[in-house]
Length: 312
Image (tube, rainbow, N blue to C red; front, side, top):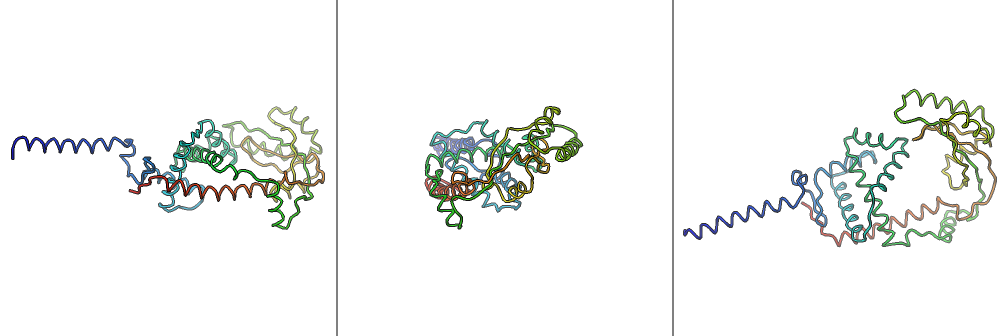
C-alpha cells in the first residue's frame, strides 16, 4: 500500500470519528448521558423525561400509565410547543407561576408546600411547570386556530337545556354571600389551625346577620371579611346548593380549611328569581369543554402528521 493511500485512509478515519463526535455535541450533554427515546421536530425526549412524567401522571390519575402512553403525551406536548412557536405564542414565567399557585391554592396549600409535595414524591416541580407552560400556550393556539370553539351562544345553551328536558328560564335562588376568613400565617404551629377552627365554630353561634361580621372583624385584626357576592343556585354544584338551603339567612356555613386559613360563608339574604340563559354557566362550560376537546383532537392529529417524529 502506498504512503499516500495509507494517509488518505487515516484522514478518512479521523474525519469519521470527528463526525461522530460532532453529532454527539448536537444534543445537550444531559440528553447524551441518558437514553434518547424519540425526536420530535428536532427536539429530544429522553428516558428521564418519561420517568418524570410517569411519576407525575401517577400522582394525578392514581394509576401507573404505560410507557407508551407517557411517551405519546410527551410527543404531543412537543408538537403543541412547536405550533405555539410558529404562531408567536409566548408564555411568561409569571403566567406559569400564577397557574402553579392557583393549583396549589385549590388543594389548600401554599405554592411552597405544593412544590415540596412534588419533591417528596420524587418529581421535579420544574417538569410540572413545563407542562403548565404547554397547557397555557396550547389554549392560546386553539383560540387562534379555532376561535369558534370558544364561543357559546344563548341559542346553544337553550338547545342543550331542552335536550335535558329543562326550561331555559328556570326558577332559582339568588344568594348574597360574604366570606369570612380566620387567617393562618405561613409557618404557624399546627395547633393554631385547630384553635382557629374552634374560633370559627364559636362564631357560628354568635352571628345572626352579616352586619355582625364587620363588627367582629374590626375587633379581630387576624380575621378578614370579603366583599359581598351574588350567586344563582343554578350555577352551584348540588352539594353547595343543599348546604346553603339549610343555612338560614344571617347565619354561617360550617368552617372549611383553605389556603389562607379557616373560612366560613355567611348567607346574607336570598330571593327567588328566574335564572336566565346568561347565568347558566354550568351548561356553558360543558358545551365549551366538549367543543374544545373535539377541535383539539382534530388539530393535534393534523399537526402530528406535519411533524417529523422519530422513535428510537
